[in-house]
Each structure stands twice: as C-alpha cells, then as structure tokens.
Image 1 (cartoon, rainbow, N blue to C red):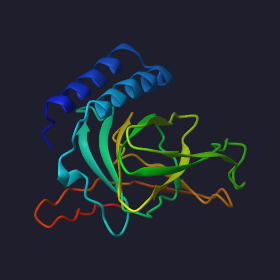
Image 2 (image 1 turned 30 degrees about the vertical axis):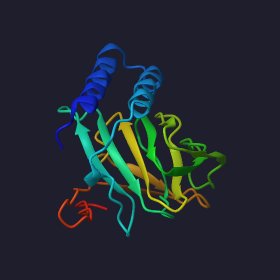
Image 3 (image 1 turned 180 degrees about the horizontal axis):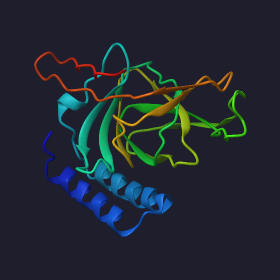
Image 4 (image 1 turned 90 degrees about the vertical axis):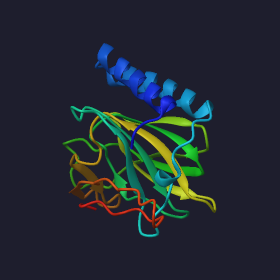
Length: 200
C-alpha cells in the first residue's frame, strides 16, 4: 500500500522520533502524541485494510521500515473476536480507528517464574480516537477483544516488523508459553475477504 499524504507525514514523523532517541518510553510517548493527532485529524484508512475475517483478527501492513526497525499496521477484529494472551517482544502504540477494544493486561512473568499462572493487571475499554501504549519490552502481555456489534479497527505502531518476529503466547491459567509468528494478511479488494498470512 502506498501511503497517502497524511499517512506519509505520520511515517516521516515516526522516523524523526526514532532518529533522535532509542529510549522506548520516550519513543512511545512521542509516537502516541502523533497517532492521536492523526486520528483526531480525520484520517481515513483505505477500505480494503478495514475488512475483517470471520476466522480470526487480521493484520494489514501499512508500512514496514526498510531495515525492519519498525512497522505500522491496521489490525481488524470482527465483532466478538478475541486474541489469545500474548506478548510483543518490542514497544508498541495502538490507536482505535473505529469500534471499541476491551484490553485485558497481565503482569509480564520474570525468568524466575516459569510455569506459574499469570497475574491480572487490569482491564480497559478503548474507544474510537483513543491511543494507548500497548507494550514496552518490560510490560507487554495482554489479550484484546472487539466489543459491540461492529468490527474494531486499530492503527498500531511497533518497534519491529511485528508480522515476522517470534513472540510469546501464554496460557494464563498455567503460564505455559508457546512461541508464534503472527504473519501479515493481504487485502483482497475484489472479494472483500482478506487473504491469510503464510504462518498463522
């Protein structure tokens, strides 16, 4: 997807932030401010990257940095869909483009705590236009669900190519970990149905 003017400006702004600091807490704060402004300015995603799947949530790449140092995604959940409990292995900022997202956070286990149930760390419902720092490398375990009767669409910024890195999925009752690669989905403008990634 070729970014339009508003999205290209946002991409350039993120690049500028990343060129001036490697502190992920500063990065996420500054990226969150810019994502809030993008959403408040009425930016419209192309319709093909807002299409849900009946099978699972989908990740559409909006921009992947040439060095894979960060990525921008449209993430879409159909009404009622929920992710497993998972981590990100990087920093991330998420803004709600449309719909509502119910987030369930968990304390990130330490290396000394293998095989223990996860500790809930709160939950929150995020609405259209709101932006949250969804993860830093020391705080990145959550699950999210689309709430309401319509799909939920988010614009997410991550400090890596989120579709290709190995990440953890957790069983919250036991703490058991499974590694996975989420992959990317390709919009299908003709059929209206997203194409699956190669590794789901």
